[in-house]
Image 1: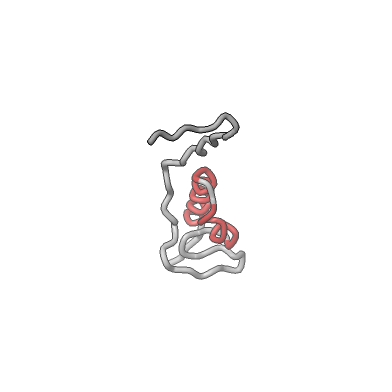
Image 2: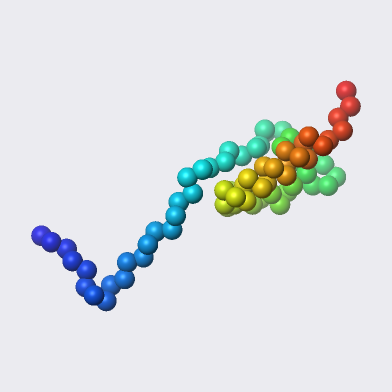
Length: 77
C-alpha cells in the first residue's frame, strides 16, 4: 500500500527543538525574604512561577540573575 498526499494538503514543519535544558536552581530551602526572593535559590517569586514554561534563553537569564543575588547577599556568621 502506498500513501500519497493530495496537492491541497499542507505539511507543517516542526518547530526547532531546544536541545539544552537547564536544571532548576531550587535547593529545597524555600523561604521568601521581605523582597519576595527565595533565600535558598535567589529567584524572585515571578521567576519561580515562570521556570517550568520558560525557554532555555529565559532560564539562562534567570540563572544569571539568581546567582548574582545569592553571591551579593551579605551573610554574617
